[in-house]
Image (cartoon, rainbow, N blue to C red; front, top):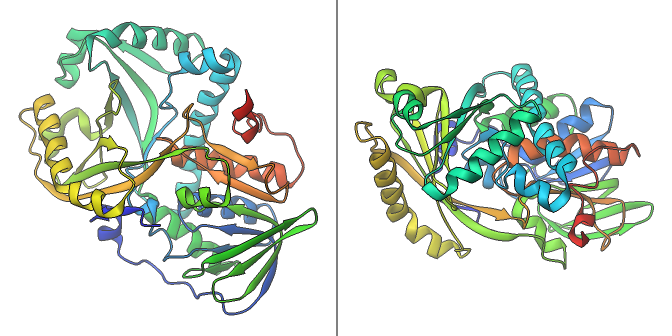
Length: 404
């Protein structure tokens, strides 16, 4: 599955950080993780840190799929408003999802501090009403978040213009967001696991899966057998091939990144990510070396050749939108790319077992705009399932909610 087009900045910046040996023989382990992106890396690290014997398989080079194309905005704010989640699942579950995502950013900070050098930094998040009719919704959203203790401020037009130069009817300013280099973080986690003795194998594609009540057997395309007590499918959007039931819709999102911008010219964007209320939404955030990363212009294209052909035009459209918002900001794209992402109907991920395969085969589908924070939460959730412990998100993030 071709998951990206153009020149994703993280891959260009970091290059091929490390090659791991392809699997050359059969192996046994407690848990086999299929997928070597940021999701698989976080899950494998969580399990190994708590005493599980882990093996990880990736069909490409590590992190070379969607992780290298991710724009890596770490937010507790889900693409679906808290007020809308409350209408669908009740206020308690809506608040739980948002609160757990906020805690996930703190867990990611701990992880980044531990492995170091992954461009993790705390940021503010500015969510503005890009259409006047969205103002009422944002005010309702702000009131609900404030009532439940989230660190938010409501910015009226004068404050928004003075602080950020944005003309909009209202905005929510959150103080719980962060950034990271997802490709680098995945590779550094996997390198550490490999150094500690975990079986890490890239260029190893899985051809067949057989799940029984006692374990799971994987057969690679090269004919090698992997026998595990549990298998976690963390292969991103490619994981959907193992389910008959369609649980998400693939989309393409587009992005570009500038050369470094002077800190004075960058202004508040240096430590504040910005995104809008329109759907699909425009979003932007800075990097540690002062570049501005801009994304959006999502569409329903899921054919790599057609997506490839749109990258330059989409980048120019994004550039025009940001220039209209910030007329004095230098915005020449240095690299532009597109990547596949998936949307669920409620903006929430799926973690856990599906009835099609039984309890030993678990899925890690960190779909939506919060993929990395979801992955951090999913790591703990899946470990709880394997260890037969309860987890507060098991039902809300499980496949059972498809019937709710």
